[in-house]
Length: 184
Image (cartoon, rainbow, N blue to C red; front, side, top):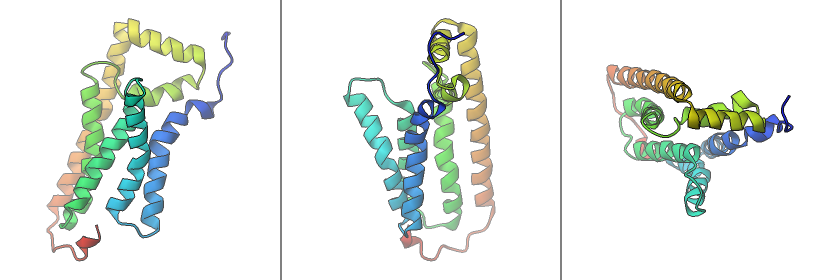
């Protein structure tokens, strides 16, 4: 029987809502209102910029989930600025996903793998005792850390293969030019 009452599941999912859902919603709204891809991605990057800079300047640890969303936005913006080939429009999404795959794989090299930040709210359901147990295991159990690295590496590798397949598929199609690419 836990000694502390579990938090509501909504509060345990708050970081995912703020760092992932709100930026995606901002990008979708701007695109729906007729904004360019670059404008939509820029709108979606505002919250991750504020959260990433705020976490670093506030003397806290780097908010890795916000930093990851910021990195994907920057990659998407840069790719959107150079679009002129319709195949790159398709490959651009693979490039953004590849950024996440690389971040996952690099996070396996040291510290806590980035997949843990997304799994903790789901596995613990916001129960403070379960969150504390997760952090104790992560800090003190070599087998637990190996499992964290393993599931993060598997997801990173599978996502990387998916990205390679999408990019390869995009360039397997012959290009006929891209009319109106200036709208990007």
